[in-house]
Amino acid sequence: MDYGICIISLVPCREEANDKSQMVTQLLFGDLVKIIGQNESWYKVQIVRDNYKTWVDKKQLKLIDSNIFSQLSNSVYIHTEELVTPIQNTESKMVQVLAMGSTIYNYNKEEKRFRIGELSFTMNGNVRATEKKINRNQLVEDAFSYLNCPYLWGGKSPFGIDCSGFTQMVYSMNGKDLPRDAWQQAELGRPLSFIEEAKQGDLAFFDNNEGKINHVGIMLNDNKIIHASGQVRIDRIDHQGIFRNDTNDYSHSLRIIKRMI
Image (tube, rainbow, N blue to C red):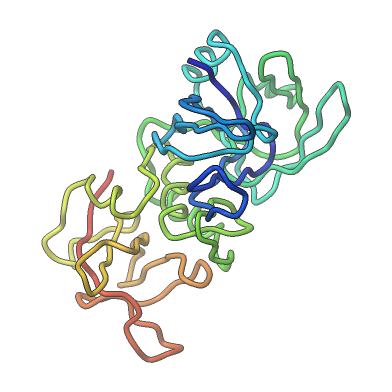
């Protein structure tokens, strides 16, 4: 099997091997993939963190051997913590900006340097190693970092993010990997019987008229929720669903609340 890593800030992942195909998710810098198929211009990949299968332009992926893949995939994940973090390739001197939640490896704290195989980078920004036990306050603080970021179908960055990409990134930065799509996330966790049982950091799921899960958000205190809908925003929530003060109406119908931690 072949392996790859994303060393570009953001890479669009397509439903089909075509630039015109819809973007269904993104790779962030440091994301590892297994290559499960290919054609002349595209790789079909399985993203390691969530097992999502998608298509990536060959020009936007760096191939790595099995030894480097094993070393990186078994190392402690360290995430960039700020909205954007500048890094510089120590050899080419090329500068690029990483989105919040990007993964770095082999980090030297004193030199603020990290390494991926033969590539070496310096960086200017804060990083965080994932903890074994999730702190709800930190999780909510990370969620607030995305506040007002625009909605983008398939997006996973502060420059554009969708509802399940938002919950996935926030949880990932706090040490828990969730599946990519809302309906997949809804299959995990422990269901709560009443909204009054919810704690900040729990996930609320919403369905459409056909009963299919189509939205997810992160519960806050005081009957509020933070979620990506048009932009990452905070709204009121009750047993019926999400109520928007600006439209004076319910925008999403509550299906279930799950405790993931």
